[in-house]
Length: 578
Image (cartoon, rainbow, N blue to C red; front, side):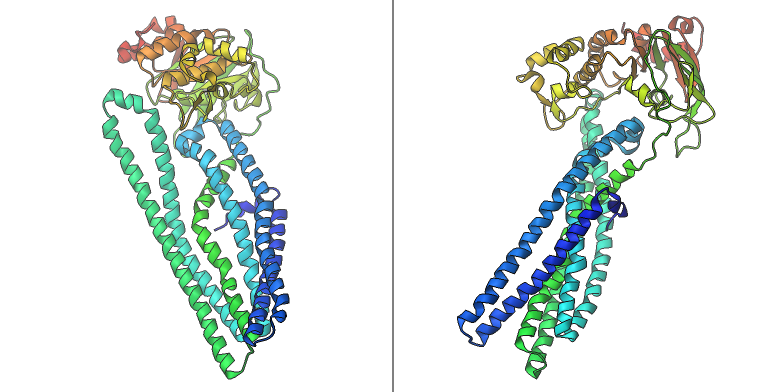
């Protein structure tokens, strides 16, 4: 039920000790409350004057208030720590994702990552708030009550002690069944998230191909599977809750029967018997509360595990070997026999890549789908670590990889589908530079071709976009990514991973006019299967099945019959746009 890594969260142990202390005090107040109430009832039963119940009634009221005020104090004192911890966890998750790069997102799914960073962290917050307090309550309160009962009547205490593990064992059995269902539900939730995001991204393409209605059946199927998993989990939750309530109520009834027989036999007085009977429900209350919240915490536990798994994913070491980098005309980057093999792959994805690029060149990376273009872009961006013994050189300095802080701070990565946050248009454009002046933002929007579109928006740059807000087309999303790049002239390395792959020809032609000025006076690596971009490139790398099969200037490659000319012939009209 508890992920042991929870106890490794910085600062959690002092809070656990504080919760434990408050729970111990609360358990004592429960005993005092039951005792005072029993005294008042017995006094009335024995027809004593009303004055005799004033003191026990006052003690009952004070202990009752203290009991519930301690619950408030536990939540109030623990919540700031949980909120701060989950906030830091979200920041650490985003930082980790930036460091690990798009390879991790591709592996786990965009929808899954977005859900984990947004809703997943919220579920972790709920999990932390519930699990720590409930566990402390279940681990302390019953034993304080049991110890007090044992001093009054050891037989009832023995029965309660024996029945408690039986109920716990029953909970474990049902809990394992619920966990299995919840794991399947969470996996279905991840699958639904990924499927939904992928469907939204590819909706334009599906419409063009006439497959949008057919693909709606796939969306329905995934949603229906998730609904079935959710209902199966709820059935287990309702069954376990009913069974636990039944067994605890039955146990209290058995205690009442034992006490009744002892009262009739004169083996126990009314006051201790009534006190035990009053305490019996509170003895089982922590486990009932824990069980009722158990299913609410399962998704939180799964979310915590997923977040911690990402945070514990090994990062590339030696990230600060490159102390300084400012890309100039005489700068150079060299790949010397570089290969890359994914962890779960038998064969290298990239094999023996060698090239040498200098200064402000525009380098096109072309090839058929699956040839390794995106992988090479991720390797250049420092999101992947190459195999040994090949090496990479920057300005003559040999490096084991390009996951260097300095290199990545000088680079801008623009993928096929730039992510837009649920925020204003201005905040999305200024994501990397939030303190940018209005004049610079407007200038960047002008360069990116966004001015006319922004003028049509009622709130202009303050319009909310992203998830759940105003829809943004693929071309507009790419222009927002371009505006981000135009805002930062200091970054002289641009990495494009097929930025126009999902755009129609007309949109791409308009976008191309605004993109070309961004490529000037920069080192550009442009992966694409749209060969018309090659006319703007200074150098071309031709990829095929993970190998660099040809390289050179466009004129050199077109001058002889090789992989480049064959690729142009196969792709036909895709290079007709100039």
